[in-house]
Image (cartoon, rainbow over all chains, first blue to last red; front, side, top):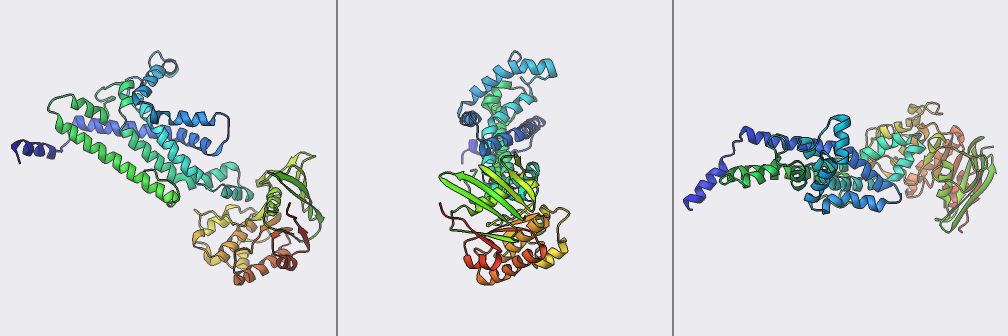
Length: 246
Length: 205
């Protein structure tokens, strides 16, 4: 083994995290959790509409929901910039009425992550909603249950593992979000520098390989954990009858 | 009048219709599978809207296309025993029984458990019940919702002879002792003859 590779191994073994590292990690977790929490009800409503309703334009809505999955993330980020920028229609409105700015803020990073996570969340939830036997809801109604009660006591609990799986999948996607985020909110240490952006920034600096490898390993572990959890939940809900999340 | 029903519905290219006025305690609807017997029960329960006609049971109007009456499913107070039972798979037997419980039933929960012999099943999950046990739990759940009438869709189909002999007397006691009007679907003429005051044949068309 050469001296060089030994020194690299020793570098890799140095896994103590600096305060700046912790800032990146906690920011990433905060952005991803807020993104998933905010997208959860929206994704569930979309999944419910796509699974249960019939309406004109359903195909178009389905396509729009899936768009962030296939469009280059940089385009999604650019669209967010146009809509939510200082002079964007939504951005100006948010600023004037609520004094809220998303551009160059961690909240903007959460918005970008939420949009990018949406298709995966909706897909997982839609599968689990479609797996709920609607005849059980009919039975609940004959027993005197209102639509709301049959939703809360039958449909929601039966689709819950799929909803959680969707949330986990969305979390994993959010942790890895890069393109739309850096386009929309740029790279601001402590504000928008999430794990992938920190990795990218470290790659631009000569000699920061240890930082890169530390962040890379943390990213992999976080995403892997979320994916495994979501697959386990999906297996529980479908008992192997439905397509897998993974 | 226990039953005053005249309904018609077109499903695809099938016409399904029933017209009967009777004071029978139990009416059996008999006919081949696919004749629309279950669709008739669904119309009475409010799960399927007839194209026109009227439904009144025990003097209560549930549906009348001319008068614009169409009671919501939850307000019809049907005790519907589905052919596939439809016990809620994520709830224990006790929660299933409690789900539709309304005051004013003709049996208390204790009487019900004794009547059906399901007191020992309360903490089980539906998936762990035998066919006969699940059948009795489904009957109990329907009865505890204080129904004004019962709809039974082939309750003996899929049970072996021993279980049938266990459920049949229960249905006879429901008919004779609880005194709820029962609309009973079967494809077995002997079963219909044993239970029904009136047999209505639903032809295949």
